[in-house]
Image (cartoon, rainbow, N blue to C red; front, side, top):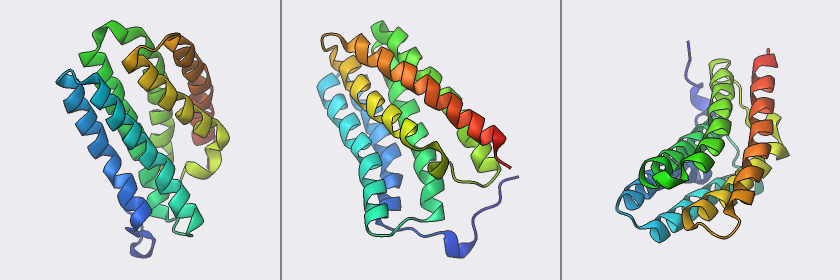
Length: 178
């Protein structure tokens, strides 16, 4: 059973508020893509993805890292990416294969994250650069998919391979944690 964090570890600061905005970007992306506005949806995705970068940078640089943020960030990362992937799958149906490739990593990573949350641990310190590289590759692959830039499948395959590796690392670490 999941027990909430003690009061002293629950700090709602600027980085955590930025993190909390990420699902909103996902919802706006979903809505705009449903309207067929692919260019606008791409920009909404990019802005939402930048929140992932800025919340961490601000938290580390200004010593605002909290236990709450360590849990919220990966949860909202997964929520954001799953919303984006679902939107592309539903409203850009000709792109189902690349979307399913990225979805596979998200599903694997989600189960690892769920194990971390159940064990009341933060996955952020344990995943390291592989997770960051995967996120960066996905943030390149998704606009490439949406805009169907030349050779977009190269980005998709790269994101898929790196993502699969990081997803399994995530799951392995989560299962191995005491």
